[in-house]
Image: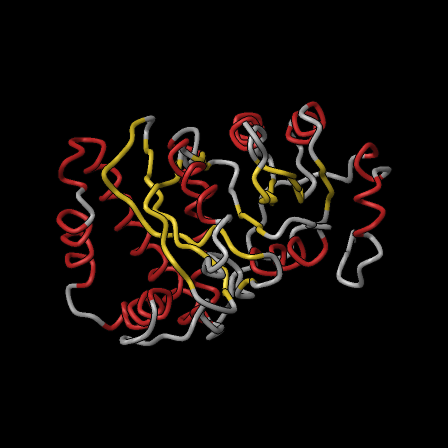
Amino acid sequence: MSKLPITIIMLTLNEAYHIGEAIENVQPWASEIFILDSCSTDHTVDIALEHGVNIAQRRFTNFGDQWNFAIENCPVTTPWTMKIDPDERVTPELVEEMARVVSLPESCDGYWISRRLWFMGKPLHMKNDVLRLWKTGKCRFSDVLVNEHPLIDGQIGRLRSFLEHHDSPDLNHWLDKQNRYSTLEAIMKIRTDSLAGKPRFFGNKLERRMFFKKHFDSVPLRFLLYWLYLMVTSGAFRDGAIGLAWMHLRVEVMRMREYKALEMQNTRRISEIPRASHGDFDPRVLSSPLQKQIMLSPNWDRS
């Protein structure tokens, strides 16, 4: 397969379970792959080096800042850049569609892609839209603790094919991640941090999502309504017991976010920002040309 003029960027922290397949999924068609690792303690770095990809390390700050650092400091030379998470897989149909899009003289500046969720090892009917592909230099990320969004400078289109989102390797990992994420969301709410986009009911897709997110806590019967939305609109009812389990857990995550914010409000004590386990810098990475280059950035911090 000929290479597409697309550079892949991934963020990693203890992604040994996913990273090998993630690299092998994009390596046949991506012109280049950059990984910004947050000092993993597992075999993430070993696997990346074995696959011959460009990898650098930086202490994790927050998702928005880490992504902005990555797209600003990875030496991307292709006209297109694509964000891929280690638990995502690009389908052959999406590769073919991207090949057509990036060759068009009048293509959009960025593209929404539909992402299908896998849970407990099974694909669900649940899909959500994510911005993953953009013209190099046309993107920055919302500077938020968690659930960052690409903000595209220009026209945004939509691709018909989809990504596969394999999420966590098991429920224990999923619950641990959601526990951290719900705490981060609660902290953002109590601190009245800016959302990933402007909350507008009649705005674009991201702005409408932020509008409902901002006002969700004031909606009567909100958890029941959210349950019904997941059941009917997202199609969880078609996925049997696994769909029902996922739907129930998603509602509980929203409930936990609200309870954590309530606790912080009543105690007048904001929780410490939860951090996933990380280690030290890998000497093999520190000696690489890419690492030496990004260490010159004023925003690189190894403390």
